[in-house]
Image 1 (cartoon, rainbow, N blue to C red):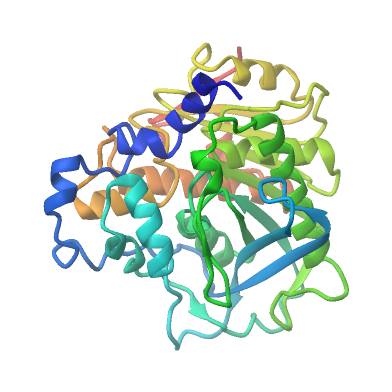
Image 2: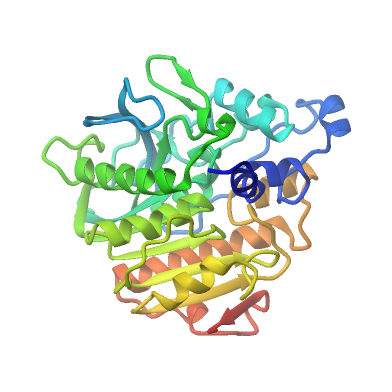
Length: 378
């Protein structure tokens, strides 16, 4: 890809944060003097569903596919799962490892200790809720260069409402620590010839492979956690949203999908005949701001929504909204806790409607309850 295209991609992800256009930022001077002890004890807001949540992580290797970034290796992924549990006692999971925090923090000019010390709400290794039956599955894909941890709040929220959730760590596209102690870096972040025509289809293959494993006989999911292969949604932030749209075109097992402020790189040219939701930041998600959104919208041939959230920037719909607010680093006009409430409400309403058949008012159009939402139909 040309250098300008690569810069455009980074400009809507991590580089945008470092430049001060994202929800959770430090300028260079602040970064040099920041004391992680003074800004410690940041926490992912508690989920609002009726269930407590458990979590686990596991490594997956696709032995039938070479890694497109390091071809001498098989494609390797890390997955974090969240799920409902009856267990409320026990240690909660770390947000990310110190190594992941250091690498991602350096990218954002943030102390790695600050990111690694974020508190979560899910009990590590908890037993899945007994007699819950097979749960609808939501697969999540993070933004380019973003660890999957940045979607923790969304994953916990969905799990607290009775979903199995799998967030995918795409190797060499973000810092990832594996069970054997290795931490791989974001190699693609430094490649001058990064090709989105490879990146997005590769995400699609990753997401399909995760579903293969979670619905197969030798599932890595915790014992007792059943996944309903007839009720699967997929969504993501930034390039993860583009990959989610692409996998719906490639794999009809995905029943519904959503994109949180991601440019539709490598947009599939065919019509999509299943529900899809586009949620954009104010500075990117308006009709005319991104031509790929207009193209994608015209190719959505089922239930669809194009929603813009006033006062938000590119990463407001991730954990950076509330974490930035707690740390006093929120660069948005909209309060970070409110952006968190909106993103969780939109996504849970979307999957409730399309995996469970529940009609959700927040998706019906403008309302006094959600004045920040703009609905578009260009």
